[in-house]
Amino acid sequence: MHPITFFLDADDAALASWRALRPDAEPQRLVLGEDYWIVLTHARLREAGMDVRLANRVPDAGIVVFYAGDKRALWSQLRDRQPVLLAAVRSDRHPVGFADCEIVQNASSADGARNLHVPHWPQPGLIPRDRARGDALRVVLFPGTPQNLDPQFTSDGTQRLLRERGIELRCAGGGAQPVWNDYHDVDALLALRPAAMGLVRNKPAWKLFNAWLAGVPAVLGPESGYRELREGPLDYVEAATPDDALRALQRLHDEPGAYAAMVANGLHRGSAFTTQATLARWQQLLSTLDARLQRLQQHPPTRAARRGREWIARLRRMWRSRG
Image 1 (cartoon, helix red, strand yellow):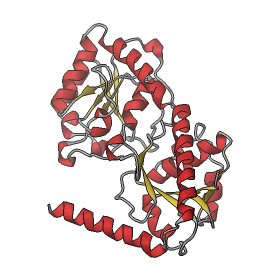
Image 2 (tube, helix red, strand yellow):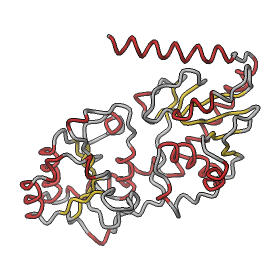
Image 3 (spheres, rainbow, N blue to C red):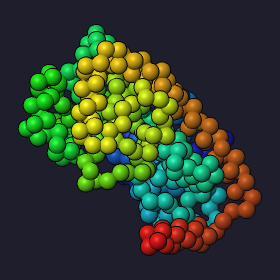
């Protein structure tokens, strides 16, 4: 296989620190999109024995995987007809027109040709729910910060309703040090964006399969990332409004067997999104990119051609926005 470089726009000291990352022992270090998609992917592949590099320089040849947010830093280093295949991780960013292909985080953004789908890695160091808690619904986790929680959930009426049922609503990002990986005392996951934020079409189903792996039922907003994984009513409860979410939580609290059925189903579904399952997808993707690089080397595009593709992509986005 051709050399594989994960490009990160960081100084040498930061790179040295990231190369020493132990994902499951220090998950709190992973915060930004590039931390998960570039640094964590490099760490997981390295742990699996693959010959991969994390660097801040574009190599002379091989496959280069980079985060869309670092496209300007990478572009400034490219040389005309440099024999590299550029794979941009789009994440929540705009398409990168000069890349040879893009890695997208949900299936609805993929086309199987230029845009290739790989699921987000599961949460490193995930601590699952303590099964000794039984089926009681006592703690509901919102995996975000308080300012991103719909105000209705913090209203006096809703808080009183939750207290009457013995339910605590907790924000994972509410403390001085956010804790994203610990579900040991969590009984349900709530992920519903405020109506003012609108629906986000390109978000991954990360919260859903983390809940599955943690053994926790999920109440989620009507987003495409969740819907494309849904196979039945036990996968999660969809809630378009805070009132819908409260009714779903009440059902989990009151209906015998509903909670246990969702937990069992989630543990089954989560097996497709473990670290090992995602690792296998990355290995297959890199094998596909290696074959593409062999073809690309026969007819390498010029730097101008790469730049041209980026401008064409920008024009298309402009026309779509006007239409």
